Image (cartoon, rainbow, N blue to C red; front, side, top):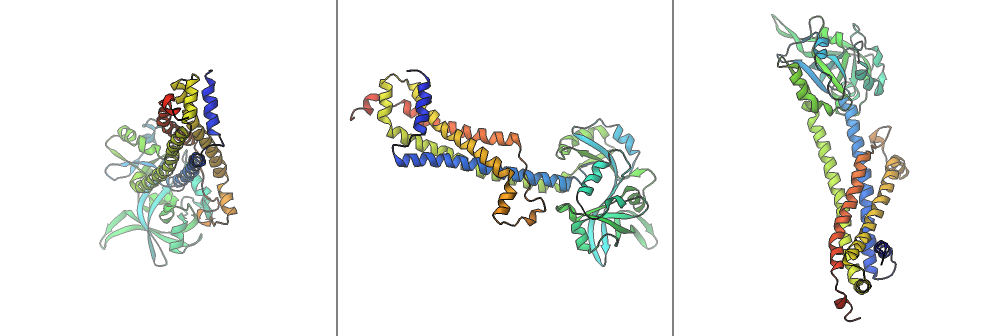
Length: 413
């Protein structure tokens, strides 16, 4: 008997329409479970990836990703020399100056805490700071932020809390830059005009306040050519966590580094944990479906004991029997995974259209709907993992099939 017969028989048993109906039902149920599990895991993982990517863009695009400040809390002089003395970090795209301080903004009796960011549009690589503000501009014009005009850009949530629009004035009070007078400590404060409002649709909106770096330096009473920090940007903001120790070693003990994790670490940890838990739960669907194959194969073996015995008497080896039933089980895994992959890709690419067609309101997600980011490596791992689980599920039933004794199986035939 030629060896391809094992493959032929395995596929034939997989596609057989006769025999025990309950066995066929379990077999198809296992295939459907793998299909649904793979498709659901691809779709949900892609949506979670999209949400995480949006958080990176909407939060980490406008807050300091990695900053270097003086260890004693003073200002930084000759920031360009400091940045030039540090070797280019992995994934780094820019190193720019920043004037920053915690503060409070006041309007019509409303007080809100903010983090003041003073940016310098004329410095090299400054476009990386301004592009997110331009992309998410809602009202006004971010280009009106010029030195000496004392204008600010506010996050949309902060502007709504203060009840202000472009052209309105607000008072900005900085925690740093205060001076002592006979009446006590007088904080640094000044009237500013709202130039623009940006809607990042994230937590950053409630504390975002951006002004020109020169105006911020005057507000904080910094010496000429001094800044608060050197701010680093990366293609992937998560790279800041990996190079923070490298940057600290490069700048020495006179300076200290701080990444975005100090302020937003818990938020991204929660998102990461949610991704893992959702993937685990959907992965269990695939695992249950894969191990349903064990039940299906054991029923097939019991139903086909006579056939197995006859094949052995015709010269089919035990190793070929083992392979034959592995092929039958893998057929379900292969078909289920590939069809699930196809469904996952199609539904993922047209998810928003499908949801809108069902009449579900997506206004809470913004104009672009649910974010979907498909990662080829992640999808490949999902499909291969489903096939591997199916392979593992076939090992024991295939081994049991190869142990069937022809004499016992045909005794009462």
